[in-house]
Length: 306
Image (tube, rainbow, N blue to C red; front, top):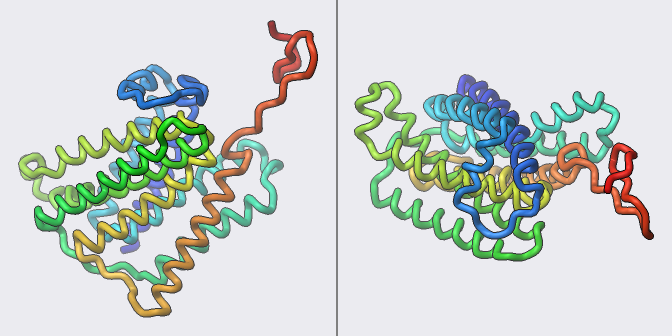
């Protein structure tokens, strides 16, 4: 169990690096002005070096995650991956020399840590089996697919914050399903490549992973990060916990006190994510308003621009 925790923390560090790099690449490629659904967006982003570095970090995180799921249940591994946002926050605080972080942001970081700890202590996830029946996988896939479709449809062509929030939720659900497929795949690792590629899980992972990455790219390009991040951070572990219980029979604490603590932990985590994702350290400073009246427009460097 301790090894699964350490591997999960390593995975979250890699995904935090990927998140920073891919957001930078998405911002440069689209400048937050994308509307509609572009199936070729990933290929356009791949021309950005920062996005490619993020993709490489994401692959490393995937390696740590699949190994962590070999040694621990979904309900343990996926909530720990939520500390990705804490790694991003810590990096940005260090980059800023610690001067820009306010008490509210530090409180949000503490709330996230406390929420994850409270949930894991109360849930005490254990047990579970390595494989799920095909019928259960079909039900899980159809249910997750329907939830993603509803979230994408809700995004529509509305204002950027709503599109980003809805696509963030869709992405979180998709990543939760990807984690369940990874859990299935991890059970074949010790049998060698021939056994791995003779099962359905690597092919399902390729499809669901590509779909989740496409959704994530659209969510990061559709609107403000503060709107998309809660869906990323909360939708993934909640979906994974539900699928871990349904597919693999993982056991969580079910006493009234344990259930209350689990719900409270997730709510505290969600509050911390919501607050921290709105920090200017995460989102960047708001754009400077253009000066009123005629005359040249002054850029952020103070030089006049045409």
